[in-house]
Image (cartoon, rainbow, N blue to C red; front, side, top):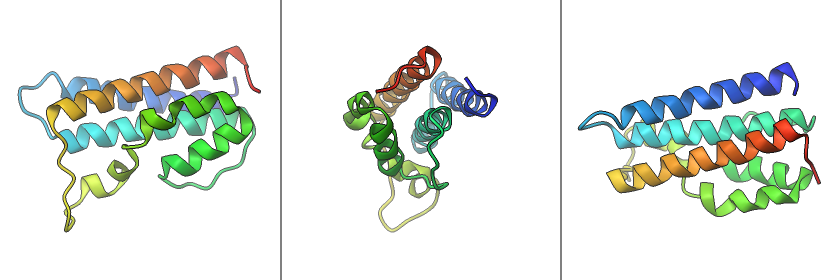
Amino acid sequence: MSAKANEWLTRAKADLTAAEMLQTFEEYPIAILAFHCQQAVEKSLKAFLTAQDVPFLFRHDLGYLLDLCINADPDLAELESEIADLTPFAVEGRYPTDIPLEPTKEEGRAFYQQAKNAFAFVSKKIESGESA
């Protein structure tokens, strides 16, 4: 694995750790937990693209990044349903908007599990060197 791909994965893992730690508090900002989950997935996908030498624009759109990943390896299509709900938390979830994003604790736990699953799946792909 390239040093740059490893750096992306390290940062993705840090976001997962932050999301995990937030859940240890009785009360916590769930939208911020969702932000860290979104960031973990985004950085995981960017790690995969970097490992595959696929150029990408620096955008927070998980759909865009996942499409690029699927073009490189169709197996990553498995992640589509896992990560579909996270994109809005890259930006909108952190700022006041006309339609606030206020997930429940249950949704926050689900987002964390989805991000954790996506990170594990992508990490395994990168580490094994598998690609379609």
